[in-house]
Length: 510
Image (cartoon, rainbow, N blue to C red; front, side, top):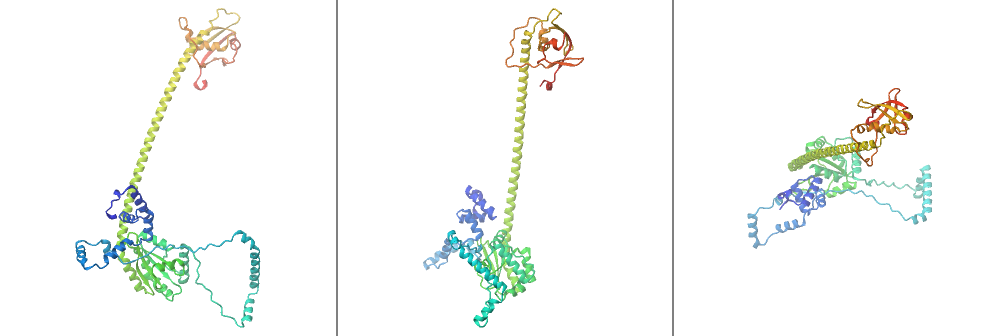
């Protein structure tokens, strides 16, 4: 079953994961991606390498092709005729082109490692190294001060001056791909002046990947400064208005990459593209009829070609492959639109799910807050009820210990007039040596003491500290009488007193 007949939903989970990873990196159609992953045994790394570097021909398929193309014996000719007439050939065989594959060249600059001798050898030879530096510095200083002295020595030794050797300028410092492209652009402008060509400011491999990913045409121009036709080709053809206009036309979707073959990267590209003559130009494009990952050389232009022939050859090569690339772009845009729509739907679903989760969290927090408030309110009500029960029990218990009112009015008796919170005035006599707390207890237990009948025996509430929620005040002058450490009634109020009962607020109580 081919990749075009496979529905991605019918793949296994591991295959779907590999397909998703591969399409996310290469942005390739699902049908072509499945076919390439099948040929790569569903290895994502191998499939990505085949996509970017080009897929090498399958030796099994080549063996089958050579076997089918070999002449058959006469006894099998009729059988072959029946097979040919009865079954059609594979569309892949019919549409197979004869274009040369354009490999992806990854330039590696020649960075030679400097040999570092062991530390012991460096230490032993350090005096000789120092002496050499001193001598070379002295000789350099002498030749700087007397520049004509070496010529006089050579004239006396040889009798006549020997011809000066020409300096070798062919060697170029190896740089990385980006710096090499920048150096070529700078040297090109220095040699031929300002121009409107837009060279790709990076290496060949990067331009190759961009052309493959964006489905554009890669125009490779290789120049050799030592060739006699280079300057004429550049000035009359490459920089001609019709060539510059055609290359810069965005509708043609051309990426221009150029290089000097004296550089290592450009030389490797010339070898890979089978360049046999300079100046050289080639058009590289993504050929879908060969493979879903192949990049092929669709046109070669060698030698000194005038603009009237250069542009038609470019136009002819590009027009032959524009329709296929345009269909691939449309399919890719459709897939991208579908992918964007799916991502938007997933994003909307995630936002809706997040909103539902947030509302559920808010409801849960509100329910927890309501339950906590109810629990707190219930606890406060139970505490208040328990406090009231303890208070009432304490009042009954304390009323049992209040001594009766003294009958005499002589010495040792204090007469106090008390206005209750209800407005009732109560006049009672107390023993002079009684504490102020007894006066407070009388006011607190007045309702219990006023009940008819003998009081019942009640024990005090356990673990309860009673707090009086009122205070006794003398109106004129205003004096507040406390009960903690206030002494006796006679020392605080005197023999007679007129007091008011003022309730305390909760804040004052605390």
